[in-house]
Image (cartoon, rainbow, N blue to C red; front, side, top):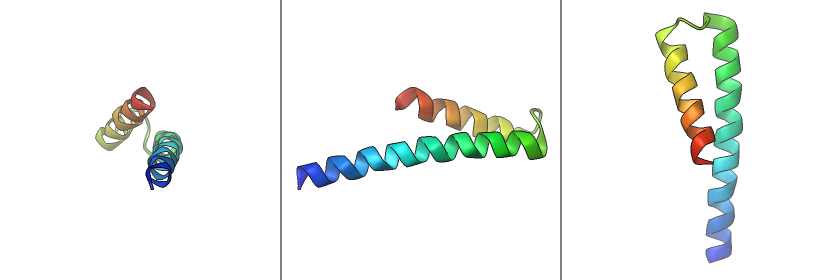
Length: 52
């Protein structure tokens, strides 16, 4: 049970970091660097990368 839980947590972290990087790239391409939402997504992606 512990192994399954650890595997699921690790998988969630890996998927979220990849997803955050993808969102960061897509938002920069569509809205540009000055958009408030883009800056929030970039900050979130940086936090995800920092904690993984």
